[in-house]
Length: 383
Image 1 (cartoon, one colour):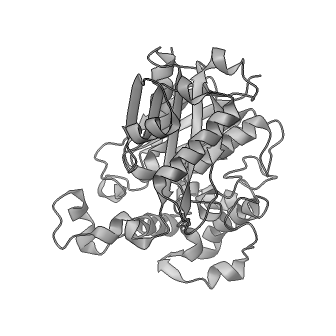
Image 2 (tube, rainbow, N blue to C red; image 1 turned 60 degrees about the horizontal axis):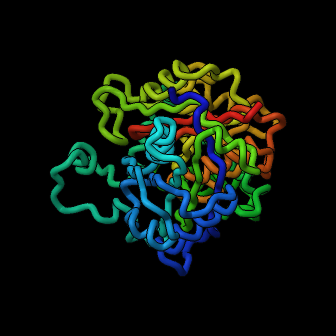
């Protein structure tokens, strides 16, 4: 039995910057120690680790540097932006099944350096799955996302002004968050429309920040969580999803390019849950690019297909709207650490400590990348 058996009890983050003078190992250890201190748990109690396949720091380096005891479980989740909820869910399953007792999930990244980005290493000849997109000029994730969004806008008669509402809404959240990289930078419609084009129709402000930092969380059984000081963010439901004939960020090779793996994840998540979309108080949708928010709203059944941008423009995801979304500023305006900042914000909303706190937030949805094989978590308060 998995439902409501585990909880996130500790969260930690380093400083965020475009260029931190530190190693990924040092950043990881700092974030993990902060998360353990936040939970009130000693490092030698940790016996499970989870992270990303993209993480360059091996588990034994983390364990030795922080003084962990013997480990009973470790795992890595693939697909970059699709990994955060998967890594957390897998560790939670190990704890719920009795394999381990205390788990840590982390992501440490020095992404400010352009040479660290995977598309900077594209070879002259390509033999893997990228051969279906790279020769067509789609050399970066933003190029692939722009293709999907252009079709969505064409089919539903949207303009760039409609899409601007996503970035502008998230920037308002970041303006309230002192830890956000864009905390002091407001974003107007004129700013958006005059911004440098990156991959039409996506401009500079439709793209996530390139940033350095680390984030970690601590997971325990719910019985232990209830003995600790913090309000537990109970892991109520968890699902992964990969759609039929999926090809990483190029879903447009399938029968319906707008039917992403999020639909698979969402259907299973709601089937496993005691709740439905109408019950969710606040959501954190993965937003490496702004189109992922409207597409996720539709995939998780918060609105009809083709209606998301209209609803966002009308304030649906704003602080006073029916479903506040990415309330820390998200990857577009807070920090980009493969979505782990969204998990922390979901926990803060449950605790009541967000800089854009939603009243009576008891049910918080977190998702990973709409364009890749992905996962989602439904967190609830202890009430």
